[in-house]
Image 1: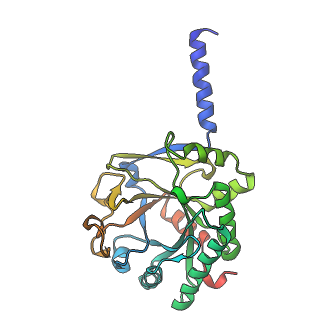
Image 2: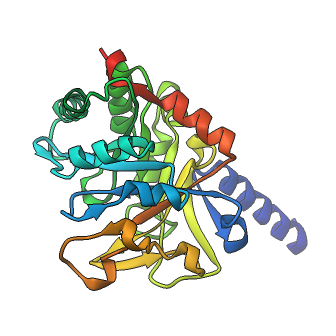
Length: 292
């Protein structure tokens, strides 16, 4: 084989291997981001004040709030904010922060009980809830375990949860481990993950005109992208532009903590049209009154 043929063969093999890799990278520009639905915020416990009516006036349609964490922790802000969001006519989602040190079944079952009990107290059992499993960092479970947890949620609620998952870029810690886990998935587990949909967090130390993140191929594409959040108490966002700052002013006031986070909240894009967003929510959010 001559030198030129050898180079082309090497490039062809590399391209084939890349196409077969279980994790791909995607880059989103500011230009593309401006065409996406910037309509979702999420919260956890912080003791602050959320003005759901003001968020709605800013184009927010969906609030996702932490309800439970691990095997025993509940979010004390979840109930009052659920009530306010319903009163403002917003869509609602609840998430559970998975902890790998505890048995998954009691975690998931407790998550469902807490969300259901809140809806019963508020008389909102007829309103749909989007259930979300948050699987990230050192607490994350394997992709196979996450698929099992998703099936557990569906067995009780009748709908597949959305999956919030941190996926490292190539070369970052944890990338090889996740690659091995994704390769080992069964066909049934792959179907579960794809049906659930992926909510990916990715924001940088510096804002940019583009942001690159990892997407497991099993999902096909991402459904939501959390483009701003906070790291070590500092607000972090992915893209240049005031509309991507995460500052929602008087719509959210955090209690205590750093002044830079006082009116800053996590925000996410939906990857699709408004009709696609409505379809996703309709298919993944179910009323507590229909749970079993």
